[in-house]
Amino acid sequence: MKNRESQLPDRPSVIRGQRITQRSRRQPTLGRGSIALRMRLGVFFLAFTGVLVALLLNWLQPGRIAHRVESPSKPPLQPLPKPDSTLLPGRSASRGDSAGRPAVGFDGGSNRQRKQPVPVTEVEPKANQAGELVLSLSKGFRPAGFKIGAVQKRLQLSNHPDRLFKRLPDFTGPSQKYGVITLGVGQQYRFVLDTVPSGYKLYLDRNRNGDLTDDGPPVENQGKGRFAATVSLPMDRVTGISQLQGEYQLWVFANNNSWRQNTLGYYSRTQLQGRLRLGGHLFTAYLADNLVLDGDYRNDGISIDLDGDGKIDREREYLPPDEMLTLGGRDYRVKIVY
Image (cartoon, rainbow, N blue to C red; front, side, top):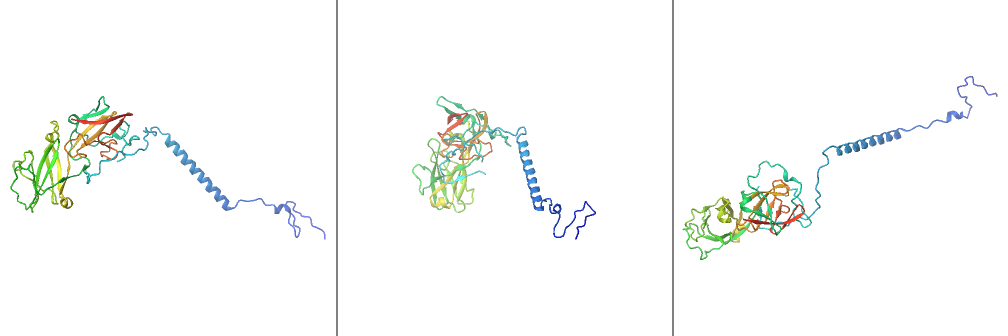
């Protein structure tokens, strides 16, 4: 049988049992999965590139690079000796040097504007020949009330008066407790707590003559417990500084625990406040009668608001007595004088 010749030369001829080679050779094509994968990779690349460009432009904006001070991590100052309790009246604090001393001569938050300026005198500390940074109580500090945490101490009570009680009032309670508050250089203020059932009363020897009948009326209970009241004394008499006017206040109280131990708790509510110019910056500083509760503010250390947040961090912003202060790369020992 003869093969027929195609009349259509552009159309490939078909031989039974065999296809023409050109038809069997098809061009390879991409599947739907491969196309989707490439599209996802492209979108991810574009997004990543956009983020990098945005970060670069943001970093290069004017004023973006701020002044920073290198402050390596250092251990904090040692806090006050652990008291019976610490009472607060109502923190990033600056770091110190390798010895745990606060660094003051830095460009930090000390220039923040406060809502209310400190209404006290500004003092310029002076360094003496011994390398001590001298701060004057009478020139740069004034009473400021209860501003920072106070440390509670205890007064021992006795059931009987000693021989220095020369004259006592006529008590109305069934029993009395006797004690003494020691302030300043040997200033002893004796007192008697009369346990009147309707409310305890405290008789204080304000003029320190041993006679508790010539000091005015007793201090009445101002609390809700057994006894709590403010005892006020002349500030200049307690401190010996005539420039410090006003009252030196102690909060004296008794709770069930202290009563079982035959003691009264007490702490100073009057603190001194000043503004110190150190290393070209202005700081608020406080002197609190905490470490040695005796009415003498020279032996208690100083608290300086280094970060300007209006609070005192005991671990980093409290400088105990005889500790060193680093200022402008130089160490000073703070000395507080009259």
